Length: 518
Image (cartoon, rainbow, N blue to C red; front, side, top):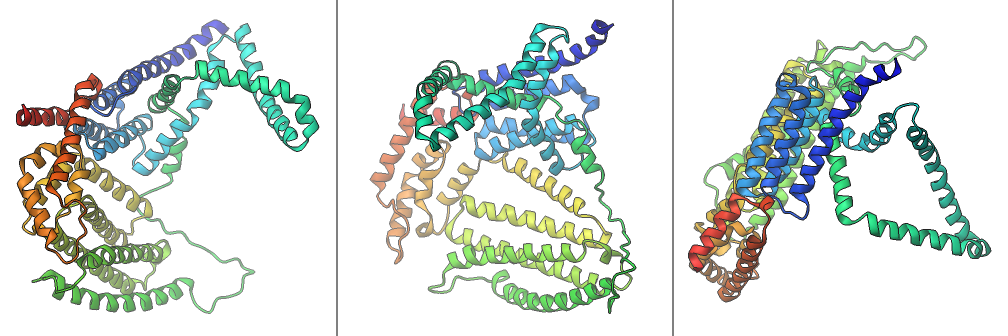
């Protein structure tokens, strides 16, 4: 009876172990001593295939399918563009696929991230437990494994206290020196011989793959999310009978405080918006000796912080029963006005950054400001919907997390290095382009720079005429020498690259350089 009863558990144990072993083997094959390339796409395909084997396409929820589609796109973009944002998108989306596949009733990326993190954290614990359960209950092996588990903690504590006593008592140190030094030397030799860098890499891969393929803590994270809904539910809070009476209804007191605050900040922000609309929106020109960098760098972030702070205040005011208070209509109208005014302020901040790009060219931070600002504007729209439709914080977190996830995936589809270089090479204001930034870009832009060395030289010459010079590389010869060094380094790396590192970007760059210097 016991042997028959153990058959289902053995079968349930075998498939996950086989999938972990397979994905770990593939991980080691694709990533050991290899840079990013087609290995990301192939590893994504293997892990997603393992998840489909476990749950089937019908077992994938709508969020899991969307994450799977995003992961496939991000993996392709690693091969096509070989960009950092594509690599990040590939990793994040793969974790999301695994989390939603294991818990198909999850709806939010926030809880999916918790599910993913839980998988990686509990994998070592599950591995220890799984080894013990794999052996038959009557076997000597299982009994031995139990004694090993029971003995590990006491031995470790004994070693810890021995070291503490040795540090505090010189005679005890001298008494145990020979044994302890020999023990630590033996441990060091063991680690040096058996735990090589490759072994540790495989162990890391095993933990990573187990966290992706295995279902850790079934139902725990799902139960946390089940208590969250998009719609706020009114909760009646009754004061204890023994508590002293308040002079005013707490909701009324909070409503009056909110009215005073929102009337004041709406008036203040209206003045700021009128100034910006008149100054920044129409016919903006850079005044003489005006610091456009301070105007954008410091001013932009201060205004963004003010928008974020405004959102926090509104979320606090409309966190609970004030949403259902009969006399809160005026407060809600003021809140809507403040959201709209903050949206207008966000447009002004966008225009500041646009004017800065028009004057100084593109850069990663400037693109980052635009993306972050767009997400802030999405947050304002969802905040408006939250107040109007009495939505919950869970709704805000869920929708905005998906918006950020979508933005990350879309960003991975663009070759930003080439886009920035092309835009700046064609920029009208040659004297204000950061030529140093060209040399900080990836190797993908080398053919572009070689093809337009005369433009780079003209930009250097223009910048040399400025009163304030902030570009360090102003010698065309030095710029060309740096490009040559990078070209030779790239060609050597490309010639020695493994097949796992293959990308369309490297192939295209190598072909363009070969055509130029053949």
